[in-house]
Length: 458
Image (cartoon, rainbow, N blue to C red; front, side):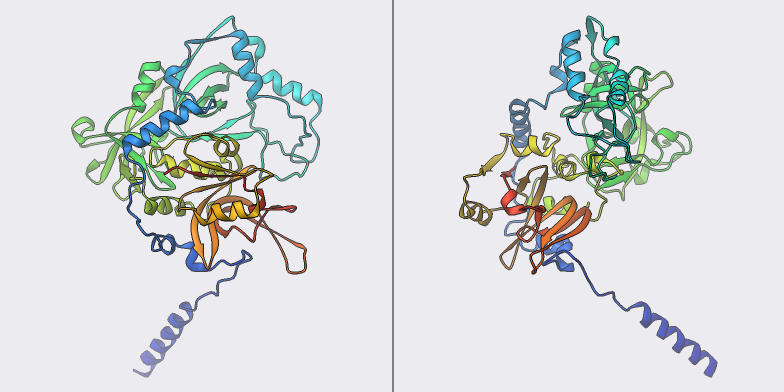
């Protein structure tokens, strides 16, 4: 009996030891652990479930955005073909040689000969007098690049996280127009609704324009509302087994009456049945049902566009590694923002400058002539979910704590002045909550001074 009591006491001490908490420490100023929970900000909302835009208003906003932003284009409205001059101009705008020096990861600088090689890969000499467009659906998350190569290129700072050939990523079920092929036919120059770049040919299935565009409008549909969701394991069809689906992906929803009670060897009773594009051996487009567990973070139709949901969606990415141009299976500052709002059905340009200078939404602009008082007055009127634009960066406004505005953003660096006047140089390299006012965008300029626009999508 004494031995049993002794063992129980030992076990009790082990339990107590495991309940010891680790003290929160951070080099981010003014940050507390409570602020990294969406509930902290959601409970501060005056009208958390206020519908900011109805589905009809979102559709109207998208139409306005496409009309205002030249970099966005409906695939439906693209011409049937491009002339040699037109296609050449597109290729050269995508795959242009930068004026600044570029380097390989080993530190060696790219020479004119290197650039000639990369330009040769674009196969400008393969263009025809008339170049018909083809269409396809992306079948797996895939990188969109400036040149048809996986080579990683960096600037003179040599940061390996910032691959200058990385542009963005496309997700399963994204529709694209196919404009041209690389010299080795391993890459396709594609246009999505908001970007043009080189995509690996193996990651797209080619169908007719009608087939591709009809798929994107199919009803009813599921929207991925988690940061990343995966289809069920499928031992019969590897192409759709545990397939990653990022926030905002829209997939046609099937019924058991359409798909049956055996989907690749699994009963769909505890799953959503979605229709996924499938690339056949010859590269052509087919479709197959796939299962998403009912436990997956998805929504039938788009999420209601409310302040509560904006915060909920943003915080689902908290702690995700920063990925320049959607690198590292993540996203960058504008990808982070775009995916949040895509889950509500709102579409926007890809790059921060295009967004910040874009005419869609309600905008406040700042110039070199704007005073500190002008910016302070604008900050005082911010609403949750407003977007703050800085050169090359964007952040989402969360609210204030003790008069300090806070934001959530996908950010690479952490800079702020110390009390002795020197600059603290840290790293964030992920989605993080930070205050606005203490931080610097560069070693010479604070975020407050660098802020050039505020955009509201309400």
